[in-house]
Amino acid sequence: MHRLFLGLLIIGPVLTPYLRSKGFVYTEIMLLQSISAVSLVVFEMPTGIVADRVSRRLSLFLSGACIAAGLVVYILAARFATLAVGEVMISIGLTFRSGADAAFLHESLARLGREQEYRQIEGRAISWIFIGQSIGTFACSALYEWDKDLPFWLSVGAASLAAAVVLLFTEPQRDKADRPYISHVLHSFGVALGSPALRWTLVLVAIMGFTTRVGFWLYEPYFVAVEIPILWYGPIFGVFNIIAALSARFLAHRWGNAPLAMLFMLLLCGLTFLLPALFVSAWSITIISLQQIVRAAYKPTLGAWVNGHVTDDVRATMHSIFGSVAALAFSVVSPLIGLRLDGAGAIPTYALMGMGVCAAAVLLGLWLRLSRRWTRSG
Figure 1 (cartoon, rainbow, N blue to C red):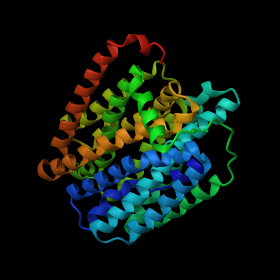
Figure 2 (cartoon, helix red, strand yellow):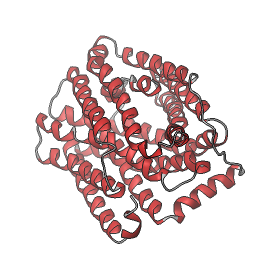
Figure 3 (cartoon, rainbow, N blue to C red):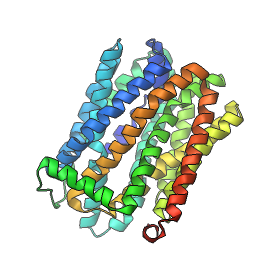
Figure 4 (cartoon, rainbow, N blue to C red):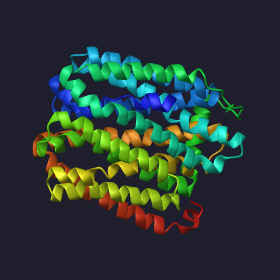
């Protein structure tokens, strides 16, 4: 239910139009997202420590509370600086959840002797998010046309309910980290950098981090380029979420070798940018919709892979490290994407993203081929 309520944050289809209605250009919008991403990097480690050393349940409760408060600031803000404060608050909420939910699930399953079911159950849980989003996004555009703030107020309520339902959770017994804060973080980084498998994964996470996040912010510019009315944004996102929900429920746990699966997802993302740039049409949204398969399958695949390479005392912090890497990569790239959108337009930006991501997938594939020993364990 926690993830279902988080899924009822229905602002996605109208977020970019909402910001543009406040007078911001793409460069400013993407700069806001860069600030948000830097906030994720700054707070990812401390919030991961809270989950590892204090309570996963407390971490998840604070997640919903911070997101709700940040959305209120977002609604009331009229200036860039105030919006940035709202972005930071939402980012803090996201960091409280990023490591805690995956670790909470893994440890609950481990106590039941069912940890091998992680990907299947994580995929099912993610599908609840997409189901929740599907419920709201179909009506989101109509609500936005009626009152621009209404989808955001409804999302405040959903985030508050997500925080409240966590109070019903029972936290399993587990090993807790007993190192000092700095020592714990350095130890976790050492684990990540000391493993050939995790080093490769860190690079992939960086590329996938900006690819999937930039993909979301490129939807609206493409819709504008092919002249799709805002009223249709909600139904389109609703279909996107249905694809994601089905993928999470039926595909997320079926990938075999995890590194190869994640590499395929990266290549698929590249093609969903490149092909719409070559075939500019409203029908190319069907190609863009394939990003939803990656959106659904990537997290459980990555989570299971990372969980298999770390121990309980660093698990949430390790997930936070990977979240930080993804956010930092996005924070660097997003302002450049905004400048590209304002300067060249949506289609050239799609072409650039497609070529860059496909090239990165090829290079990572070559690295993977040279590292066969550890890939066999995926």
